[in-house]
Amino acid sequence: MTTHPSFRHVLDELYQVIESRKGGNPRESHTAKLFKKGRNKICKKFGEEAVEVVIAALAETRKDVISESSDTLYHLLVLWAEMGIKPEEVWTELQSRVGTSGIQEKNSRPTED
Image (tube, rainbow, N blue to C red; front, side, top):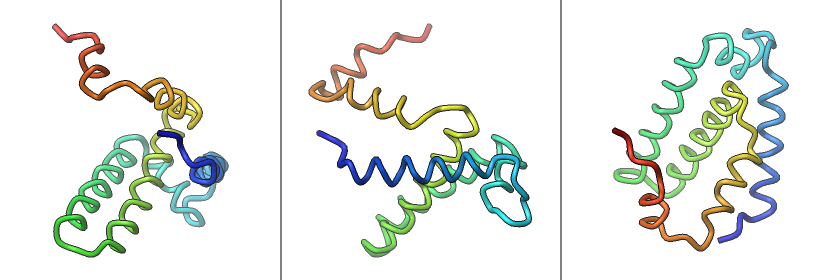
């Protein structure tokens, strides 16, 4: 599976906008407000949005799933920016998994004691 170039482009652009909001005025930017509240709040918002995707998929319309998915991706990018994770790092990881079965990939992970 190859990531569609325009999809990557949109996420890369959004990530840059998110990064530019770090240290911004929380009264003027929702993103700046999230950064000011910290990682715990960012994680909470990401989790809430992910749950809303599931709820929409089970009980709402396709359009609702698309909308909630957009919110989830935005909050994931905010989390990445908070943690200093660049989208390219995730794209590289995804690319390394192309052609590998999910079972094979999971079995290759180190086990926890």
